[in-house]
Every structure is written in structure tokens, then in C-alpha cells.
Image 1: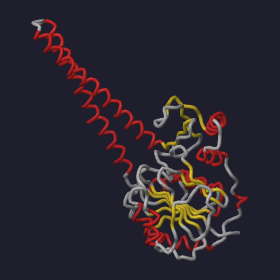
Image 2 (image 1 turned 135 degrees about the vertical axis):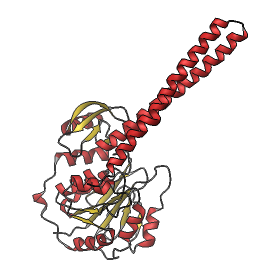
Image 3 (image 1 turned 180 degrees about the vertical axis):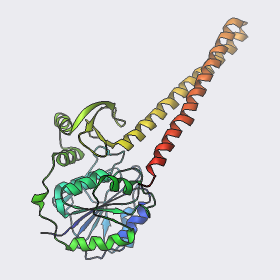
Image 4 (image 1 turned 45 degrees about the vertical axis):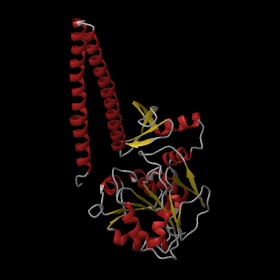
Length: 346
């Protein structure tokens, strides 16, 4: 059997330092290929491969779609594209976002689990919320090894904590110990793949990420792994399904967007805030218009109409203040409560 020669690493906030610490300690002759998703801005070029190549003896690059996989190389997901694995090659696709991200950690981990099964080592590092948890579950279901950075030393511990909460992790280690373990695993034969058959969920969700299905097939596949809800997708406003028997709670829409419950709530909160600010803006414009009309009516000595418009403006202005209070006190408080709870030690 081959060794654990497919290493997939996911990081978000604080990830640059963590990634450098790991790849900088790997030897040039490691018998493995390393694939990295770091959450990056979609609209800016990335120099992450150069940064990693400067601290590591391994060459690093943004791969092209269909590029053959070679051991002893680092492959970094390009901005605004998912990095996926097939047998012997990489896919670089502009598929639907997962957990608000493209590239997403879950998509990489899931595709690696589908293509390479027990040969995969998944590593979740520092970051906000919980991208990587579901992907690490897929790695474990296919017999791979799950490693998580010790949240006590992580700059942003939410992602490691989520993985520890929902995945039977093999090792939870400080950064300094992860490279040595990866080297050891690369030399150890992986378990027999027959003991870890492909699941319908992994196959379907990997296909969704690659966007190789037509609309009818996509809808049928989402129906196969989920139950339709009354919610709408925060990304595209399409119908959304609750993924069956999933922990953490997850949702998928019929176009392919995917969310864990925490991310879904964050998106709903942001959309609600946008809607309320939009309502406040429209109402403020109306207040200004009423005051303008009141002044014009006064200039025409139409005092009754002037008073009426002034009253409209006063009453509407009070309603605007209520909406602003909801935004500043209600939504802000709820978001703080959610984020604070997320950071509590488990």
C-alpha cells in the first residue's frame, strides 16, 4: 500500500504564519504532495506560493486545471477558485461557494477523500467559524488521518475547536509537532481502502463542487442527501435543503452553495442588516422630501398642508430612529453574543 502521500491543509485567519511553520519544516524529499487552501480575498492576486516557497525547500505554485500531481510539491488554491483532486490530477474550478468561501477547505478535503481515501491526511489550522470540519469528516469516513492544530496556541481557535467538536480527530498538536508527524505518516502504509467505501454524500457533494451536472441532475442529487426547508439561500435566494443526519447542522441550495448552521446564521444576520439599512435610507429620503414639501407649502401660505408634511416628517423620523436602534443595538448585540459563544473553551 502507498503511504499517506496526499496531505491537505486548510487555514483561514492567522493561517499565513501557521502554514509557514509547517511547510518550512518539511524536507525536500518528502514522499507526499501538499495541497493548501488559505482563505484569500477574491479580487486580489495571491503571492502565497512565493511566500511558502521562500520558507520551504519544496516548490509551491497555484496549479492549473488538469495539472498532474507530483510528490514533493505544494499546490495552493488560487483566489476565487476551488482546488479539487482527481486521481492523478488537480481541478481548479469556479464552483459555488461553501461556507461563504471560494476556495473552501471542505471542498478540497472532500475531493481528496473521494479520490485517495485512506492515503489522505487532513490538517485544520487557525481560523474563524468552521470551514474544514465537514471536509475532515469526509477524510475520516474514507479512512484518512485527521490532524488539528491545538486551539490553545491557534491565533484564531474557532476552526480547530469546531473540528475537535464534530470529528474523531487522530491528533491535536501544536504547530511545531505537525511537520514531524506528516513526515512519519508519509512513510507509513495507508490502510486497505476496501474497509472505507465511498458514501453517497461524499460522491454527490464532490460532483456538485465540480459542477459537472445539469440542472435536473443537480436538483435530484441535492434531494437525495437533504430535506427541503422553508429557508432561502443567502447567496442566491434559491431553495435550500437541510443535509440529512449532518452534524454540524448543514444546508445546501439547488445551485450548490453550502453552509453550516453558524455560517448560515452569520449570512442571514448580514442580509438582515443590509435590508434594514436600505429601509432606513429610503425612509430618510422620504423624511427629507416631506420637510422640503412642508417648506414649499409654507412659502405658498398653505399652513395646513405645511403642518401636515412637517408631522409626516417628524413621525417618520422617529421610525427611522427605531430601525437604527434595532441595527445598532439588536443585531450588533446578537452578533457579539454569537461570536463570544463561538470562542468559549469546550
